[in-house]
Image (tube, rainbow, N blue to C red):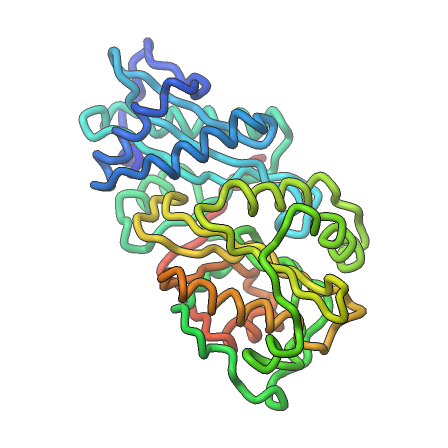
Length: 342
């Protein structure tokens, strides 16, 4: 939970500063006081990732007296959204209960906005549960509006993708949604276990990066090497469990799905899988690669006892929405928000 709406300005001695490695214990304490849970592993990964690639992370803290009073963690998004203009994704913000009412949440958000403007970013994006009334009031008071993306959720079940292929629509062209989101429309020529029988689906490995870059380039018409490298690094190193996959047809990588498991982003307290990106090489469209990937992802998540998978899709991406609804997705309990920065 962040600061309350219409809080008085923070005292003059309080300033937002960059998060330092030694802030980890304070951040964990603040989050535990707000959530009732210790999410040490999540925050340790977030701070470790920021130290390894500071150009992609922005993290501020505010002290109140001798203790850390609040924090904000955000990440730069570039290739996501199918766009070249970068944005910030606000992942976590918290103010300790005894320090609320002093404008600390607003101070943290202003620091993030100033950083975004200095880097010529055009918006900040985040999401929140519709039940988190304090956070919704904070976002409303801070100028956020409902974003252009639908948050979709699916209860994981091994038999989700076992429909008759002949009843499924034909979808293979590139499309874009948001992140966490699906970037490309997978083909629906085959469904579920039938597709997985014909397609060799494997756990993502570091040496798959050139093939993923090749598929992304063919679909988007651009060489997004840096974005792909970061996407693969995140899938391999920042997810609590490795669940990203590649699909091979006749020994050639024909598609991939990037997903991660976590329970820290946006105040989540339960494990969830986030479907980030799925791509299918146009040369292998209509051969079941996309649906084999989703089907195997569901099977793996069920084995890990992860009960839900979530993604974001632009509300005008009707083909992709149709695919996901057919796979069992439905509108989730979270709302996507955006704050345009003029």
